[in-house]
Amino acid sequence: MTPSTQPPAAFRPGYQFASDNTAGMSPAAWAAIERANADSVASYGDDPWTTRACDLIRELFEYPADIFFVFNGTAANSLALAAMCQSYHAILCHDLAHIETDECGAPEFFSNGTKLLLLSGPHGKLTPEGIAHAVERRRDIHYPKPRVVSITQATELSTVYSIADLARISEACNRHNLRLHMDGARFANAVAALGVQPKQITWQVGVDVLCLGGTKNGVGIGEAVVFFRKELAEEFAYRCKQAGQLASKMRYLTAPWVGLLEGGAWLTNAQLANAAAARLEKGFKTIPAIEVLGTRQANAVFVKMPTALAAGLRGRGWCFYDFIGSGGCRFMCSWATTDADIDAVLSDAREIALTVSSAPGSPG
Image (cartoon, rainbow, N blue to C red):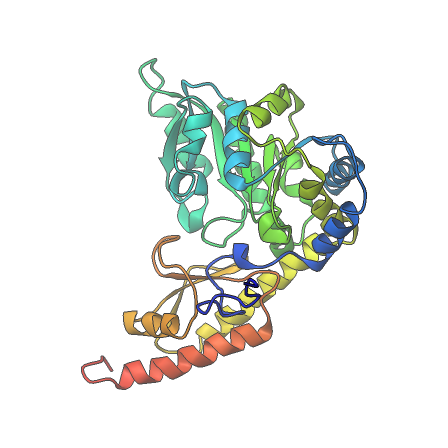
């Protein structure tokens, strides 16, 4: 029996606003994979594609960083944090941070028990005052010692840390002898939103380690761990191997980075995703039944809508989450989201909203 080449019946191309992980590979990344597949090369990262990818990342940041490639963001964040602290230390992060809500305890596991201390902050961002309070509230030996601050750029609420924000956080870290980790799953979206050079929001403002997102930016599989503080990278290769993150055919992780970085697709992809979210946000604001939440700066839009409207959209095949962030429904745009996709979901939302508002017993 010949396997079917048709997608599952429930799958509707263009109806995916659940995550930017749902998009396929960027054409530039895909083309690089095809080129990498043409020849046999050395394994475990000792190949020209991996060397080129590392060089391009160093050029991007204008810094001689140490770089490692892993399969996913959970490994990138968890292993990077483990390299920055001991088991009796604490990691300060926002209570909405991905390392707290979506890593299944991996940061604690790989660091042999390091505790996450959760802080609040407006718009999904940490504040210097919150960091200082967390450090100063207790200094006795019975309490885990704060050692690392982890920030997310762009944040889980689709906001970004400005250069000034990061400088203030870095100053707080220096004052309290804390290391600074950046979860950059959507780092490219933050660069596009701010219109800055990558170095301006990383090593120039004191970031020690960046987990640079590739999957959400257009590669198929893989993230890069970028060490600006080189001593933290000592023996990191062993951590990767022990955690099952050393790819034997490493070129399939690294070639897509070459494709994205050589021609600038990494930034173009982020700009496309951000622009799609801006278009969607503008459209949602024209629908009385929908309330746009927060201040969008990156590629996700959060909205509040009647339960019947959300159910109606899902009934027509639209996919989006309502359990990420601080309430509401999240519509995430990717590099592949088109104007037609956005216009279609807005059209359905308007049509369903009219039905909902005219239903017996509905308010207004």
